[in-house]
Length: 196
Image (cartoon, rainbow, N blue to C red; front, top):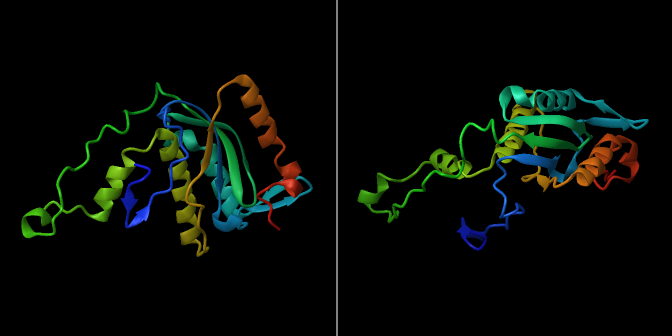
């Protein structure tokens, strides 16, 4: 798939681990705003002062389990233009296995008989969505909710297209990431996402 064309452009190679299904496990994630624009608040004396949009994001992350019962986020931080979290996906609580949906094998020729099988953009996106792992479903849901909040409040807001994730493999990684998240506001002046 990395070399397949989409709308006459090459796809960007996936950053996901090809050997992992993102069904269960612990993940360190980072989600950024487009162009690292500040929407969620400001850092004052090593403490984040959340904007209304930042508060909405905070509440969505804090209540993730009510929308996604298989996901748990016990540790996170909202920064002016991004957020970090440790996300646990409980494979015993996922509703079903993803990626088992068969794709349409109909060749679209553009002639009348094949036009009846033409998929709408929504149907195509649903088929693509069926192959996402539960981590992507969870993060995508949070991003979508915040985007809707922005639109309802006439805020010109966009997320960065993708998010960064790291599979947490052991206790040392978990401890190091925990320290990073907890101390992120205090290190804002040297943070790579602080472009101002």
